[in-house]
Structures are given as C-alpha cells and as structure tokens.
Image (cartoon, rainbow, N blue to C red):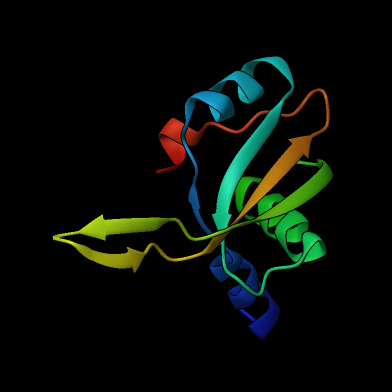
Length: 100
C-alpha cells in the first residue's frame, strides 16, 4: 500500500448517522461522513470511491462550528469538526450498516 492509499484510508473517520442523513440517503442518494480537518473535496471523493468501490457525483464539505456548553457553572466548548455530503451516481449505493 503506497502513501496515497494510506492517506485515503485516513480521510473518512466515520459515517454521520442522523435523521437528516437518513432522509438524504433515501431520497437524494447522498451520504454524510465525518472527515479529517485537512480533507479536500477531491480527497473525500477519491477516498469514498476507494473504500466503498462506488462512483461519486459530487462532494460538499461543511465546517461544523463548536457549540458553547455550560458544565457545573463553567463555560466550555465542543470541538469543531468537518463533515462531507457525498452524492453518488444514480445507480450506486453504500451499505453503511455492513461497513461499520
């Protein structure tokens, strides 16, 4: 395995499973993933194609800002993270349940 393939395996951290993501999977054939902070659209596209053996149509990346929280009267923050919305070609599917 060369350096580029190792990088592709590290780009996708986990699938993001939420109600919005489930509706998107059913209706619009897009999947949501937690990705590393330095990931680019082309890296995410290549990583999904490499790991899941599918064809990617488009990728949108969102930086999720940290939320402020209170804990025992002290202010704190959750960590910021990055997620990617990956739209597949019309005939492609990913089985996220079997992939975990």
